Image (cartoon, rainbow, N blue to C red; front, side, top):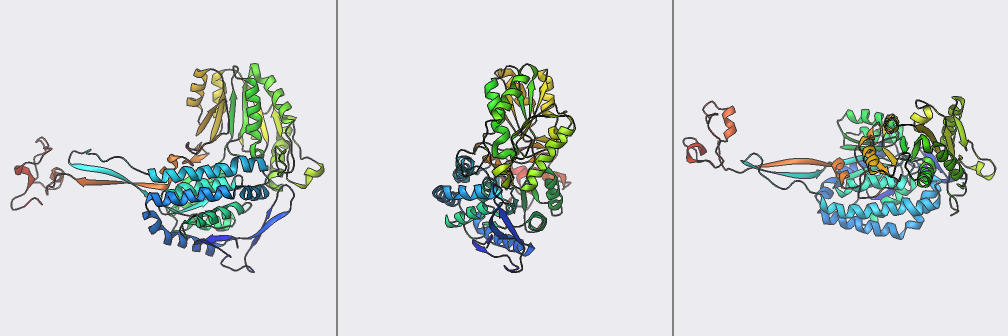
Length: 520
């Protein structure tokens, strides 16, 4: 049973025998981890109905109640961390070191953060802005959120979508990628055990064209949050537009890694290899195109090539493994195609550029790959590869380096490498990206936002800034005069107060009431 609706697992609405099935495959071995029954439109409708039913009570729950549930959830996830990490590595192929050192602890930290943030959801303090009225701001939950999460970080991306939504008082229906639904289900079960009311957090495991589109276009879904490719993001926007839903998109990336000539070369080399190969390069913020000022270019290329040569591919459950497989054979072929087309166009592959043979041929592995001599307008420099591939290009002036960094439709993340504070300030100011690191690339923290510019989408995950996506801001205005005839009524009634007269802050008997009117 692979749907989690109204607080419990259930089979798809069509029944186990009639439903479509999908094999979740371990990409390191090609073996089936679990066969999942996929959701259809009826399952989506049931999940949305459960979320709609749960919304009134959950949205009215005191912040301390929501915080208490999340605090218990963090503790439960901590207890089950090793088991969850194993499932995450099995369904994605990511090294167990990554699951245990980043994915699971990062998710637990997100839960703990939003447990505290749930109690700090406020608006502006009350104030008198017109002189005659007191204004205040209410921040209110939107309603039912339909979220679609990707396959590269199944647990973390589920958390990024679920946590700010429910901490703000919304209810949610999450559709994880059909390739990697297992940890999202574990996450929902733990939330229910922590005391989250039935229907607040629902999971449907289906594919995009069927379950995803049914969710995004459902009339009872008030908001859509999507993480994935820019092309699918545009489709999500089109579907959501039919019912004028709020949309939050975290889309593709092509992060520039800009190395100025005064940078610490060793730090830049290590940073580039780590940031281009994390999660086998299947990371929308991964360093994918390095621009290196010409005095350091040759040494940088040589250093990266040498260090990539030490990266160990292997069994994800071997703690000595540095890089696991890609998510699927299809993705392996896609990455290989990018590299082959770059070769054909005249680029040089300095390191890697092949599917490994031997024992690793059972899985969807691809070698760490370094490409040089590609043209700035080439496919491998402009398009998202989503694999362990780094393209390196030289630049001369600082102006040119920043211009090249911005020469992309994407704007999710970037980094600048320099010892000069003025260069770093300029780079962080002028590079168009939602996050710019200085002398590092990749780290994220729960307290700070994540989100892009340009074709990388809009809106923020994590941090208190994410509440801007998942709440409505309501202006409440109170009359502060207790006067029946307001000064502005002169625009309607021809016998109102003279527009030329000074406006009284304290109403006098002469303008407070009309003849025969008590003023109340």
